Image 1 (tube, one colour):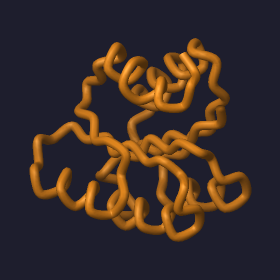
Image 2 (tube, rainbow, N blue to C red):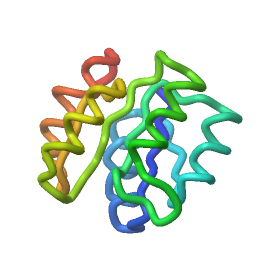
Image 3 (cartoon, helix red, strand yellow):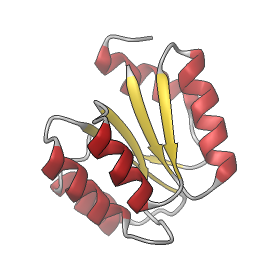
Image 4 (cartoon, one colour):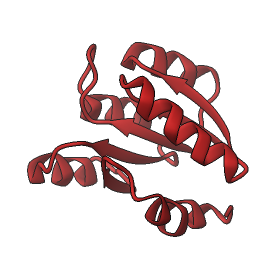
Length: 119
């Protein structure tokens, strides 16, 4: 499955990309919201991992933009902060899940990736 990862932290991008590719997925990466939207418009991915805090845009606004382009895309919000209001707002705007950094890769594999019949 094609997956788009959006995060301004290079280490997070590389770590998550390696994990997803080792599970048989094709990954595109973006470290800015504008770049992510350009990639998504060109090739809408069925799954997006999206950091809530980006240097050029708010992750929740980007979530809305992704859903406006392709409503059936599943978006997993990523955050390094325990912010209840962010999580609630993400779910209100159609997020599939919200995960905390550092990642629990077992959770990602068995609770997110299995929803797409790909392990």
